[in-house]
Length: 496
Ligand SMILES: [Zn+2]
Image 1: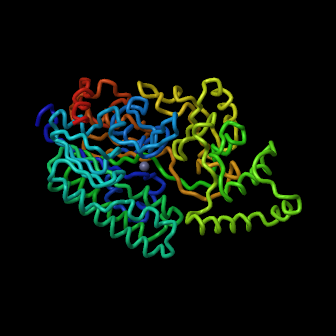
Image 2: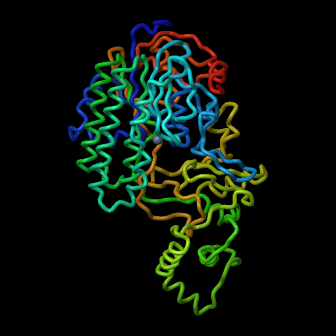
Image 3: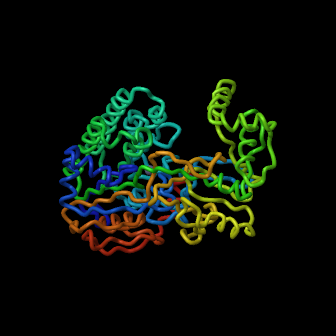
């Protein structure tokens, strides 16, 4: 093969949302013996996710080798701050080629399952893609990948069911069956499609922990699920010289939830969307009780107020049920007004605050700094660098994960803080390199953008000219490589 790739083969198994505390339980229970063997022959580390630690932004940081300021994706959606409209981020928003695309441009065959972002596919020669996740329909390239894309079960099929289903056993049986189908499809593709780099992203850990986090660690069925996934480590060991395990972020159990928009509302920086209907009237009255300024909204007479205070929770539930009945949706606190608010958090996942006027920036930063549940507030320029930094909201809020806080809803809730057990993302994901040329080391901390330069140099391929990551030379026996600007050819292919 060209460009010094020789016969070297690399498999990357991306387990979305996996953390070591979860995998270690699977390993010590004997559910993942093949992973255990790979760890004994390799170096394991913590992969520190990029900010925010969410799938759509974290995977591109890993697969491009650059920070979000250069690859351009910060959240599931991009927000138009002129009108508040939000649209899903796609490959059109991605500004940097990914490792499997760069290798394909170097005439090295690559195969990828479920890339992020998923669509539209950049239709390069030597690149084989099958994807169903984060895509409105299965997508594939070229045609011979169609059967894999069409048969791979979509994670969304059961995503919501986890919270609603009465019978968790039945739910997990179905999950188990789906995991079996996915692993079988991936195994078949690994054996039958020709590749030098195979990048497989499985969403099972993230999917499970979001839906049934409370029982995922202990359920026998979850252990069975990961025993099935473990087969892929054995197959990979057979087929590849280097096996890599990586996740885009970890997962934790949190006990407290902070609502940034409620905080900004109470500081007079965010305002709710215009009120209408019974739900909003009740909310406005309720807020006026708790906020400093006791203006605004509907105020019942004193006697009724006393009654309401005493029966508040029951009333809230009743009103909620009533609203649910008449509008066919559950009670929900109002959203922020994206036009009228001086500062607001556009999504619950981004942990970021958009400030409309530069003159409000310092005031907003001060309103957030030092508050319970917030470890630190940074500007986007403190965290990112590159031509697309201004796509991010202005302020980034480092939530106090250490003390059990997560950012929850981006509606204006009754309280800024809430006691609530929830399973959610954590910045620490996993990384493992295992193979003959790996120098075993104790656990290391790896930055998201180190993975791509390291693997490219292992394969003897020039690094992207603007790579932020460094080659992890002390972990892997790599060759010195040049740098190359892949962007113009990739951009050309992207618009085709
Ligand atoms: Zn993820």
